[in-house]
Image (cartoon, rainbow, N blue to C red; front, side, top):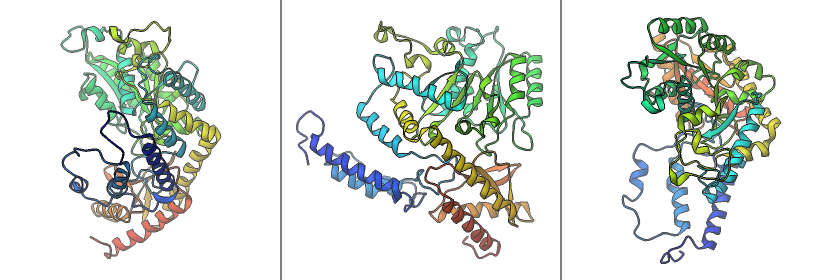
Length: 486
C-alpha cells in the first residue's frame, strides 16, 4: 500500500497499476463478462449495506483492496443495463468510446460554468450539439446544450416557455398575482411524468397540466387538444405550452406533430417536443419522415444516452431562441463576471451552475461510429423489433398490444378471462426476469397488464431475441398448464 502520511494524491505508479487493472476489467466486462452475469442483481434490499463496514476506514487502503471489493461486492449488486438481455424501460448502453471519454472527463474534472472555466468543454458542447442537430435534420436556428436527463431539459424548456409570456415572472414570481391567470401545459395521457414534475417545480401544479386523451394508437388526439385550449381560454386560464412526444414511454408512439403544430401556431403556444427516446431514430433517413413537424418546435429534447450509446447521463436540449433561456436563467454574481469576450457561458442556459464535461463522450461516440454506423445500429434494432412483433402476432395465444413504430414491442399472453390474463402476464414477467438472462418491464394499456420488450442495447443480437421468444413460449405454456413456479 502506498504511503498515505503525506498530503498529496495517490502515488503515480499505484494509480497507473489501478487504472491498468480497471481498464482490463472494463474491456473484459464489455466484451462478454456482462452477458455472463444475471441482468438483475441477485440480491435483496439491504444485502450490500450489510456486507460493507458501517463506519468509514480511519486509514487509507490500497487500490487493489478497493478493486477487489468492487469485483466481489459492488458489481454483483448491480443491475446490468449494458446486458444484451436488458429490455426494460428503454434499453440504454454505454459503448466503448463513451466509457473511455468518461474516464478522461473524470481525470480533467472540468466545471464548465463559464467559458474560461472550461473552454474546451464549452466549445465542444456547442459544436457536438450542432453535429447532432445536423444528424437529425433540424434547422440551423436550433441551438443545443447538454443537461443530465430529459427531466432537467424539459424543466428548462418549460421555464423558457413561461418566460416567453412576458409576464415578469422572473422578478415577481407567479404566486398570488391578480394580474396573472393560471398557466396551463398540454400533453397526452401517454406523456412522461417529467411534464408533471416540471409543472410542480414551476409553480403550475399538477392541476396546470392537461392530459389530452390519445387515440387507438396511443397518440395525442389533436382535435381534443384544440378543444382543451379553447375551453381553458374561455375559463380565464392562460395556455402556456404543448408538449408533444415522439416515442412515448409506454408504447413509443409518435404524436401527430403536423396537426399539433397547427394548433400551436394558431393559438401562439410554445411547442416542446419530447424526443428523449425516439429522436435518435431521426438520424436514419427512412425513419425521419415519421418525425415530420418536430423541426417546427420551439424546443426539443433528445437523450443520446438512450439510443446513441452514450453512457448515462447526456440529454441535449435544443431551443430556437437561446436568448429566452438567458432571460429566464442568467444570473451573474460578481465572482463569476468575466471580460473574456465569450459568446457562450453554459451556466446562463439553465438552473445548474456546475456543468460536467458531458460533450466529450458524445463527441467520441459520434466520431468512433460515424453517422452511418449509428444509423445502421438503430435501423437494426428496429428490424429486430419488427421480427419479434411478427412472431408474436403469428403465434396463437399472444397479441400485440400496440403498434411498433420504432424498437419497442408491447405484447400480452392471452387468456379468456381478462383478470386471469393479467395474472398470467404478471407471472410471465416475473419468471422471465428470474432466469437472469432477461429483464422486462411492464405498462398498462387500456387497463390491461402489458409486457414491454425495449430493444436498443448496442450488444443485443438476433440470437438474444430468439432465446427470449423461445423462453416466453415455454414459460407461458408451463404457466397455462399449471406447471410453472408460483
